[in-house]
Image (cartoon, rainbow, N blue to C red; front, side, top):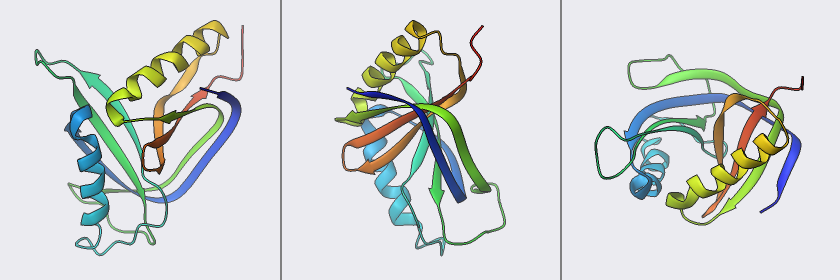
Length: 148
């Protein structure tokens, strides 16, 4: 697994959708989001990006708080389900490419966190998961350019 520094991620005109799910259902949820865009009269113009936070809530399986960012063709008025965000931009990010199933994403993120700690890098953004193709996901995190 190669970790690359000084990366840049910039995507414009995004539909933001927040929900909860589990690692085991993440692939079906992503598929559902892509397929649902036609019912919302939105055209997807790029790859889906998501962020997640893990919560146990006293359950057997980890519950994920998820925010999906879907590039769409035009601006829209936000509502209680979907929020329009004009841009997502990360500068001075570190990236790792994950190849595998969604339920093993945590392993790649942990390796990335160990690398950040070893290099004394301070993350200043959430981890963002950029879905490339199939089971290939690039994980980005913005880091503080100052090291003291």
